[in-house]
Length: 269
Image (cartoon, rainbow, N blue to C red; front, side, top):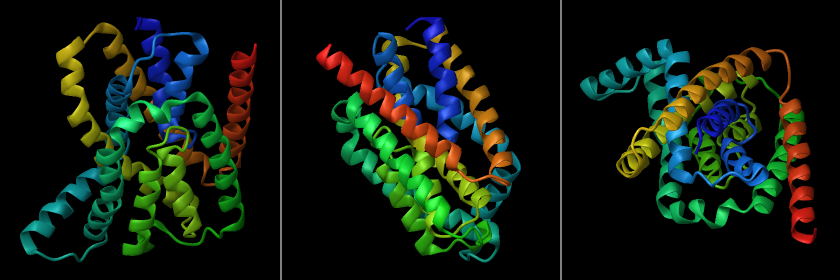
């Protein structure tokens, strides 16, 4: 992987992780489209470290409150405040994705990375996102999330193991289906990303560093991912206060259909 390839992949990772357009799809499709060597899932995870930094920095005040709340839960053995409940719900929401990752990791590295499958998932989930966001009211604030909401949004995150579905896209769609307002659905989705990305990094990055080391291209990719990830969060949080998720749904459908067309041409050209 060259420095330029790492830079492009890092920017794609950062932007598409928090825009509901599927980072795994973009990381899998870019090498296929441009004829670059397949970076592999371990490199994908390394680039996710950049987005982990982005979500930690952007929501640093929230994370400080949640950390204090977590220690208070341990100390008092009680869950009382809004922040304490949010800690519990984030833990609950993380469990389905963690289980799915452990069970389906091998498929995620091979079978699930077919360009046709990824493109189809992008297009289909684009339609689902548009439909749900259009028909469901947006009258529940983030503070209203409960146990059932956390479980359902967590199950949606587990489905995002399939490239093209999009972790943020699936969780935001689930949140909107539960009538969360658009900013609240995005915030919970972004906060949910931290535990799952951190767990994947702990599991995969040491092996990657042992095999290839902290190369210059890899470091460039991580820095690009962190910078573009922070920008993507800022864009989404500002945009959805006054707009729907429709533009992201249209992007998913257009890109999905374009990739399917390219796949057909390459297969029959």
